[in-house]
Image (tube, rainbow, N blue to C red; front, side, top):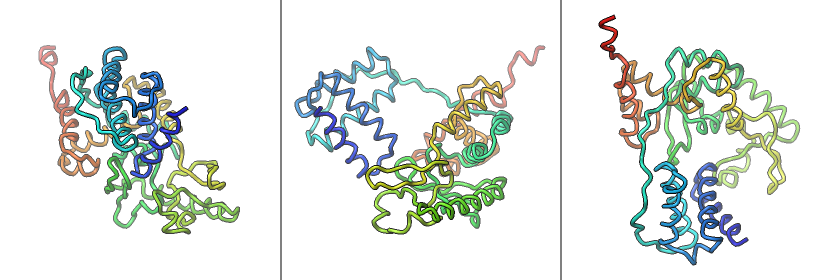
Length: 320
């Protein structure tokens, strides 16, 4: 099918611009849906009218959220700008999905503790890191051993959202555990090397620039998978990081065991990190830097959480 070749071009372009794998999957999915919606016509034979019809259909018939609708539009515009090379005039009369402003779900400190106690081993260490640093799930999984700086008591977060590096705090309570964890990883890496393995996947074009870096201990993932990943193209086995679904399932299970009915997830620990820092008196600019937010308006959402009910006494409590 013509669109399959087209999607390959989209993937190649996204990778050349260092978009994440998740974004790649999202963009290609929306582009495919756009093509199928228009009876598999090639995008070069379509334009603003077809795009508007597809986007409007998402809002009126599928009732998607405003962010999802915008995501679909950006995916299609990327296709036309970078692949089809066709200028799309301003698209007016789009039926905009209603933007609903949700406050983030936040765990209390006690809930965090209970959830962590329902985890064990690597899963507990990893989730403790998410709460203690405010990192996103994908950022934590992509950490390399060299990103942990024990001397400066910090963690270097590489290629966060928007391809930006930042620094976050290394929780003091996790230092000894991480040092022991890294010693075990060193033993594992030496075993891999003796087997003729020991390579990991390098970001961007570093493999060409530093041919031996893939086998260096510092470049290994901090949370490696138990099994190897086989690459058909290179015909090699690599030690990749733990799959995100492994952590997500364990967190869901721990939340259920704790009897917590909030709609929590791994990302809730990031929300909790920010809210608890602000609640303890940390200034908002510092929290913004730690989270890697481009705009302080994004960080301000956590002040709204604090202003809602925390510290407010109900009038009912004054009469009973």
